[in-house]
Image 1 (spheres, rainbow, N blue to C red):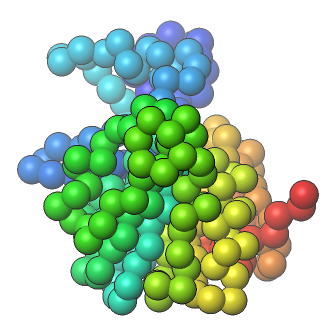
Image 2: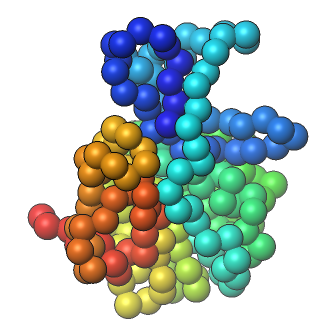
Length: 207
């Protein structure tokens, strides 16, 4: 949870994934969507940034085999450190609307980077789920817009384990307020506490 302001407005800090950790430096990659992230984007060296974390449960870094990572848009952020730390053969599928970003930071940690853009400016024209080939992999990870992740779950269902990093609105970040709960096969769970990473087969999506 990140807060880069002293004023009471915005009241809540912003939940942002760790993108990378290297040489004692934490990198955050985020999209400016509202007042909080706009303020954070204007911070300069020497300004104060208040952090609470790391929080919740992350990815299992001990998995091996042929791995697919499927990200959509800013969902690429938490997958960078995952790709860096996994001791596996990784194909990284990156879907974007138009502008492609941060793929150069991934290339040294993966076997292949497969890119799609909705406008066709880079890579495949269309959605990344249209070119994802599940039969090639033993395990998959995904993060991005919910419709994309639900499509990835449909593709992977019964083929391999799929780990999904959920992006629910969060308030406290420590499991107290219950504002980020999600339905699972074993009841309601908190994305900030039991998640944000869940096995896809555990999640219940009501269309």
